[in-house]
Image (tube, rainbow, N blue to C red; front, side, top):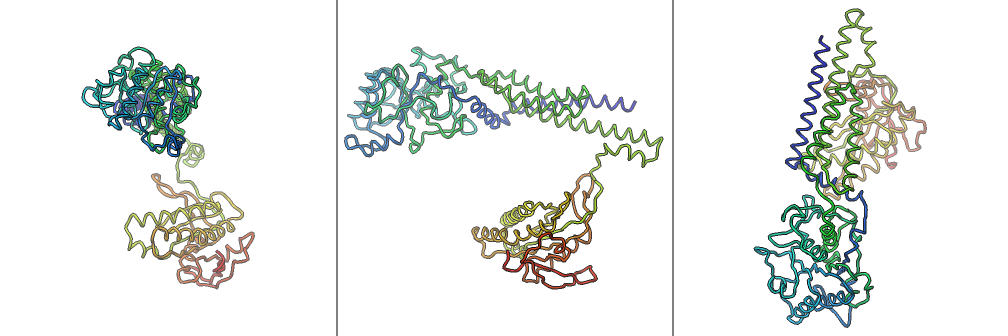
Length: 595
């Protein structure tokens, strides 16, 4: 009866796990708590999808790049620095029209008047080209601008002015979306798409004038067809490259600072190429769309319930493996759906799956613990307790494992003078210094195959030969000690000097070899692996004895005898009385010049 009641509780607990996981996932989705992480997964989906150059086959970028800046800076017939005279822009427009460009968009700022002759030359070229789209980042009330004298003046030329797309960076600083209008002015990509399509673009295509839609990037930077500004200016470019296409003119040189992060990665993309991608997205009817909110909520509910549902069917721990498979399959499905033109949320459903998996794990362990206790109580009625323990030993999860005794080499180390040093420094600086020191020494110990037992302030305890047996544990310990008092300490002191500290440190290391008791000790709430015994105590005392010595390392006679390959620079120091031992101990060290 008691087992039946627990099984009912187990079902209720699993249902509660599913409800909590789904609720957390939906709440996160509704509040956007993990929106930045979701954007990062979206960037990954763009990059996994790869490149489709056909999306930009109706566009060409004319870039003011580094070769262009160099050309005009060194030209004898057309010398100029940035920004170029507007008559140069006029000549580029004329050459594009002559080459048969279908439409032209200029991603340069023409808000302020310059030389009247240059401004007039540009105005004439724009009037001749007809329906050129100009960009601006300065938008006044009701979509007004100051471009070439204002909106009314532009209409005389038959041109359009639009808000620059660079205003639409997301929470991670990446340009991934565009919209129909900004402060009443049509955005640059929308205006370009309207010119290319030959008809107005309705706000309804975006779902509303201010509704942001994903840019369907064709590929990483450099995907768009491209020609350098100076080549168009001089007429040295293939007319076939621009004939019948929409040409977007703008800055691409890094020094002009119109380069931005995009979901495609692979470095920054020129703003002009971003505009081309956004305009192509609008022209193609915005093929990449966000999934409806109700669908995302449904996915969160589904993933939050799948692992608890399997737990109800008695899968137990196998449900966790199934949860991993479901999580991987969902990520794959999200990518396939993205490739098909829909963006479904990934992070919040996976969060619900993760919470439900851990919750199911907890309920499963509780169930198994009850089953073990129930079996123990049942068996104890009929057999002695020792037999019960033996029967249940394979499922006993008590972490206080029995120890083993084996011969190991124990190391203690300490940083000399650190206590006095720490009294004169701020807490932050002390922590930074000790962390750097411990990192250096830990790398040496682990690199030699040692086991780190504990940090004691700036002190370290380690053991070689446990928990894995090592025939050469003494050699490993000596190799680690040599590295610690040698290059590691030297590197640490050099780092201190770089940080502006006046002096470096010495350290002390003690090595002793002998039988130790190794194993996990502690309470059920916390256990630690340790090595206990006289060998450990002696190693600690050897380390302490280096304080009044010219040596930084003391090696016990037992350690020297255990070495497979004693080094030639291991020298006998003296016989010392060691507290806790009746006989004197022979102590060795490395020659002072050795490390």
